[in-house]
Image 1 (cartoon, each protein chain N blue to C red):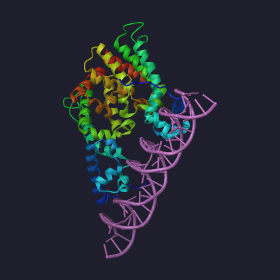
Image 2 (image 1 turned 30 degrees about the vertical axis):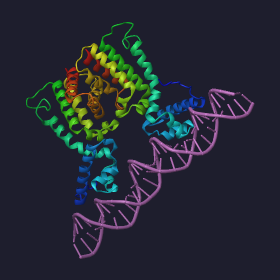
Image 3 (image 1 turned 90 degrees about the vertical axis):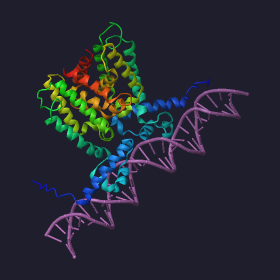
Image 4 (image 1 turned 180 degrees about the horizontal axis):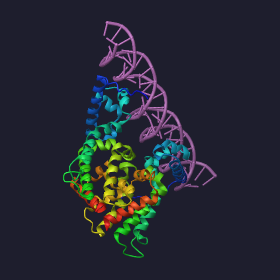
Length: 192
Length: 192
DNA sequence: TAATTAAGCGGACGCATCGTCCGCTTACTG
DNA sequence: CAGTAAGCGGACGATGCGTCCGCTTAATTA
């Protein structure tokens, strides 16, 4: 057995991590997230490129780290929070309601952190994030509860409308309310 | 009025266009389409980079040109072909059936030309293609016929499961039949 | 067939970004 | 306070992009 002694992070390292995340947040919000380069982030953080690469392999993983915080919050509410988003208080909300509530919460997350989502979960990379697996399991469980067949295929299909690129594209012509209305209808159509 | 004399394409130019498309088709099919570079294509086609850029601004537009042929075919069947895919013979298929038939045809297209789709319609670029506008209008019309509200939002959402990246991702675990079954269910859930 | 012309050609070039490498610095430990 | 390894950073080589411009050649005209 290897001893996985976690040997605390050095103070300067922690400080630089914080600087990097703060600088990246700014840059992502300021312009097109796809155009932010690793060098931009390093410079804005007042850190060398080597230091940056030591922690984050690429731009997307930085955006992912920033997004993670907000996603964890939602994940918590899904697992332990009040209904209809979570399972409790009042208990036993029907799966269609819970799916619609999940959709609304995700749309809200996208609306508030679109630039991070566009930086992190673009294209095929989206499916590789840990968060995607979580959302997928959640939706699949709701489909099971609603006794909908073809759950494995449908779970991904129901998450597809939440792709950041699509949300951004739709927001050019539609309001958040219109998008949420569409999602609401979709949830009820599929899960009763 | 400017005289738009179309002045026929020179013979060598036509020959090179054909060479480029043939070479690109090969390269896209051979490996990861995202890793094919413009220089690769130029070399494989036996053509200089300048020549390549004269016609195609980037890799995606080459894949798009190749895909276009197949897409046109499907578009024609949607507009003028027999039912339930097209409007005629037998006429008046219900919108849910027509949507399901459209889904099946698109899934088939993706299955047969996945490498081209991955080369052409990846990420946000997908929404900018002419083909996307066509699919969107078609789905929206079917939703109108089925008298489904929130059509503007739903049209994009119903196309989202056909994103090439998602199809490729799902095909790792699912068969084409399972995917088509999911799409079929989705079509009937939303459009009756 | 020869002369004319402009469309077409191609590869060298300049630029941006990536990701690594390694000698120097500094926070922690005893 | 000395030893040490974790951390730092910017120079560097590699890769791909897209352009530019002098040369070639297909098409046209006489």
